[in-house]
Length: 102
Image (tube, rainbow, N blue to C red):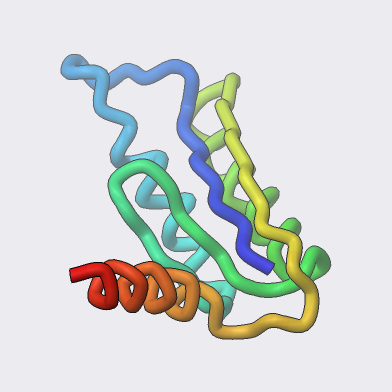
């Protein structure tokens, strides 16, 4: 299963509005979890089952809450039990189709 999530403080004291310190703390939680993951500019994607991923997402929210009394969370999930390695496999399938079309 894949869980793409974005967590950020709803408020910040940073003069330029940056939330990077809070987000870095959330990503630290993800990395320490040991779960396969991918970070991009808008979302972090975790791979694992419900019981593995949801506590990590909650802990990431808790880390962000240390920076702000209000936290925003967006989660999107691909619930496909029995399939592992989908962080890379899903992208590879699309790349293959694009190559075949050329």
